[in-house]
Structures are given as C-alpha cells and as structure tokens.
Image (cartoon, rainbow, N blue to C red; front, side, top):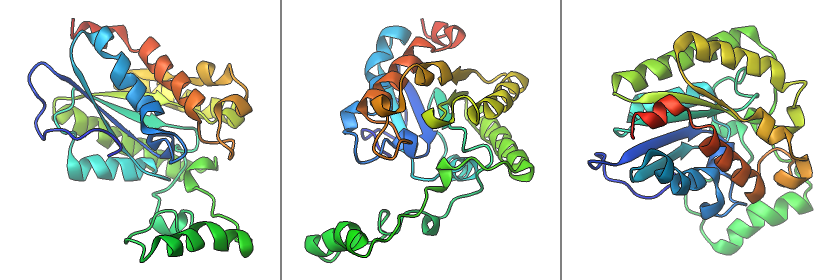
Length: 250
C-alpha cells in the first residue's frame, strides 16, 4: 500500500478509510507522497467526521475492476469503516490487467543487480533504441458490452464483500480530463445507474476535473494527475463527502 503502516485491527475510536484503485490512486512516482489525493483526504477528513482518521491506499498501475475485486477478496478490507473504489472512464470496459501488459521495466519483480544497470535498462536504453512504451491498459476507453457486464458484476461482488465485513462502499468517479465530455459521459451514466441501484454513494468528480485545462492538472502524459490535480481531487472528495455518512460519526 502507498500509505502509512497500520495495525491489522482498527484502533477504537478511529475512522479507517481504504482506497482501492489504479495508477490514478497510486499517484505515480512523479508526485510526492504528501501530495497524492489519498494523503490530502487523510489530513482533511478528521475535521469532517470529528474522529482520528487512518487512510489506506491499495492501488497499482493498470488495475481493472477485476484486479481490484481480486485484491479485496484475497486481503479483506482491514476493518475499514469505508472502502472507496476509485474508477475512471477507462475502467468500465477494461479486462483484467497483467504485469506483462504494462510498460516494460517499470514494474520490476526483483531487485536490480546494480543502480547503473537499472539506469541503463529503464531510462537510457529506451531512449537510445527508441523503444515506445507500452500503453497502460487502464487509460484506453474501448467499448465492449461483455467486459462491461463482467466489470459491473465485479462491482456487485466488491460491494457484497465490503458489506459482509461491516464496511460501507463508496464509488469515486475520476474521469480522464482529455475524455470530458465525449468519452466520459456514457461511462458516468452507467456508474450513476449502478450506484443508485445498489444504494452505494457516488462521488462524481467530473465537474471538478473539467474546470481545469489538461496542462494545468496533468503530468507529461496528459492522463495522470500532477500535484495540482491531486489537490483538486482530494479537496473535491472532502467537499462532496456524503452527509449521511459523515453524520454517522458525529
């Protein structure tokens, strides 16, 4: 997890929040830990719920809903009060992601032999040989009704597991800035429908993201968010925190 160490059991009187998502939630290695939006929520939420807050961040590059469901199925929710599943508009039709689909060398599975060797394989060689990076499978919106149905079933399973472990699921929708409104709107409609049908609160950040130009809130890839973009997401989650949930801790 990209978050502080925690005890396996939630301490008495503490509100524990578990974020689950892909590279948008992880924050990339280009954004410092204190500036990713999950940390911003960790610092701001205590004044809303009037309790100490712990925030867990379980996320990985390229994760699809099936990866996220598999993670909570195998690990559980760590006695979290709330589990925030963060989805973007590419997630609805993204099949399960494999490490082999991600950028070569960016997710090493063993310690590099030397620092110089890692510098060469990860940075110098790709530029000299002009090796095009693989596309993150989570950033491409490709309509596929069969995968969409399977992913919505994964959301059903995710919700059922969270509920069975005495947690409350919240859906957070963070569309890619480049996809607003043409590509993001149809996905937004589906997530709103699923949220209403399952009584799962939805924090929709479309308007907050759309208020800023791509260059202002994005990294060089124009997809992932920089520190300014993370600040907007974090503050928007705090602003839109559903009143019925926050009242339950007053």
